[in-house]
Image: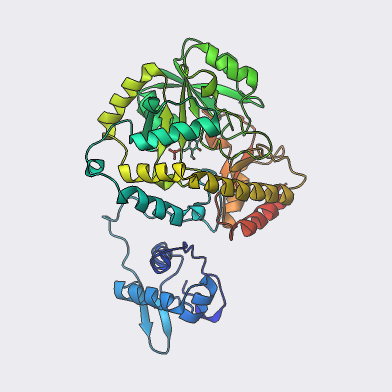
Length: 450
Ligand SMILES: Cc1ncc(COP(=O)(O)O)c(C=O)c1O
């Protein structure tokens, strides 16, 4: 329905990222028009009003409006302001992957607050890394990754995560997911935590391995159930995903004595709030464990930067698999990350991010006081078991009606069944400005369903 936004001091609910304001505003408006959220005929706020609301210069809004008028998304008529144009209905040849529509309030787990990406520090580091780089930098390189990054990672991982990492044992990958695929391709049968991330199970299967469920309880994965019918196990020992337990010390010891390969997914090991950091299992048994880390939570998933520290016997097969997949990971991101690490900008950023997420975690606990929130000692998500008789599907449907997206426990089980019902709350996901409102909606929702 056409709407007159111009009459209101209203929020158009545009997510306009900091930096590249005009381009960001144009993108947000295009997405809102394409998705139908801004209907044809709707009148947009005056440039001055929107500029005030978004905290940008009026010229920025005017330039974005002009651009979208030129592209046919908007029409401008003297005296009647700027309105949304009628777009032709999408042709069958429209791209398969439409730009992602973000919900109004996003508490899904999986992503950090990407607005916290340290763009200025990243740019400085990129400039420094590239300025003095020799010409050979731009040629094919080592499939393990650039030696400068591998040396920086060896130092960082030893210092911060207790990983025994020689640079020759490190392979830089395109995120955790590529390391998982490369390792799964070398194994027949892989045990994976139940519950765990369904996408990662699919990755293992596509790599040709069989997936076997491994139960999880309050002490983490039940590693005593592992036997010789599987040859690798994937664990999230620092913060089980999604239940949030740290793997108990006896189980850590048991799993490295078991004999198969332990794939250690250390996706958010830097974010621990209430206790001393739990060091990596790899530090206890570097020949039994392939330790995998990622920049997805500390910096942003879009970088697609991960790393795996391998037992000696797996270095050559993984390097060959990597070479035959994509030669090696692109070099600019690698060098930039290396500079961030060696200049300790990375540590500073992680420290600031940890403090921000700890405050958010505290706010979550305060808002949901009296509710049995679990898995809050670490990470960027929490588990809220639902009371008997309350179904995830009903709560999620009501959440959607209120513009709130949440994670569910249900999609993480290996098989359907009569599982406990629960919500996964990704408190790291929204931007700081959106977080309090998202919590308000969540708290009201929970009061209404409990
Ligand atoms: C359990 C788990 N492992 C690893 C990752 C990171 O994966 P990647 O580095 O491929 O983005 C995530 C991200 O959401 C995750 O939830």
